[in-house]
Length: 290
Image (cartoon, rainbow, N blue to C red; front, side, top):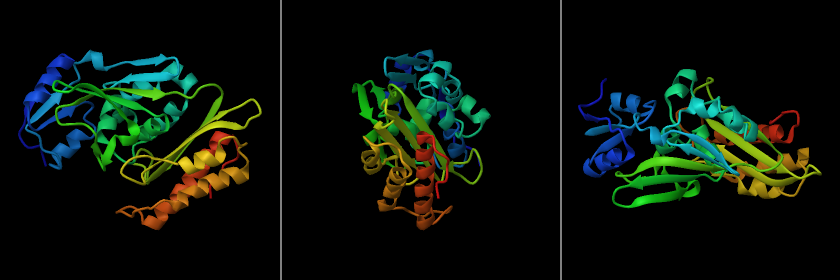
């Protein structure tokens, strides 16, 4: 199948893009096109107007300011993965992004596009949740507003973005001091969408106890799921096998749904296993995760 007819626009500035969004009733933003184009070709998505924002240089960029990472919406996934300073400050980005599609798709796919697509299995959205990201959207009518990632997912593939708004920037809170991380996911093949994934960051004190734990699951709900109960179990404790096991077990209190890939019970078991593996990585222990 091919996309239904549409009008194509290629603004050169952010202001032009916002004006087009304010004028067009049924428009879609074309960033990397790795999700939108296939969905339009299958006619899962139909738009009267497609606004290509690839010429807008102001939407591209990576900056580390104190304990925050600022990323422009049009920054390519591969640029974030290969950013040398970020590999030193927060290596979990490179680890997690290596699971996103393949090299060719990462060279086109954008950070803003991934967040706006709001796939519940998105590794990037999981990182945004774990790192308490703030997402900036702008429009002609309402100006600039900021959205916490915790409220950004309204439903499956449905972010908190109005039809006339453009996602322009995302701000991540980077871990401070000494920290370790872990990332694990299960998919049918490498590069496929995650069926379940888990990520963890432990900030540690000099005695190796955990001063702050951040743990998230992807692929189990409409958006990423922060494992607050697991974080509370580990905060202030040393990452002993018993503590890690108890933290991973908190995944079993969540509700799970089956789909065309796995049953609810299988997804529930995967959640515990992936969480255990991510926690063991973050603790620097041999991985069992069973």
